[in-house]
Length: 139
Image 1 (cartoon, rainbow, N blue to C red):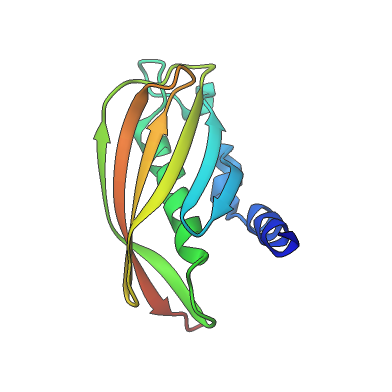
Image 2: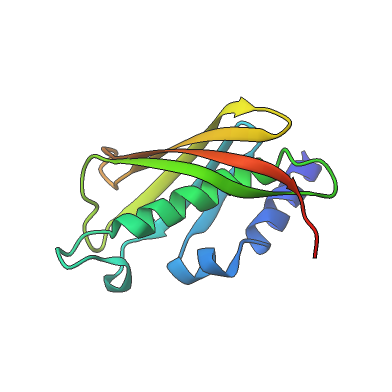
């Protein structure tokens, strides 16, 4: 139990600078589910006053990447190989986008994560499916 809390704290503290930049906050992380939240602010909005599609994809990519990191063997890293987004409903300024990412495939060379983005009212705003490639990271 303490190990799980320590791992979550470490994951939250070691989020990429990009995640902090867009305001993505890790809520929970386990091998079978990652949850993040992000407030919809004017800097993340498109010209229609709703959360920009790129911000939605950034939140989802970070959630799926975080999940992948929970499964990486020592000395390995990950990069997004492919991502597909279905935009269903807008998320308006002042709302909170919630991302829940779950694994669909956990292989040795690739992982597939599906992330559902919901609005504050619980309705689905987007569904993102991404493929993460497991790589040897070399400087």
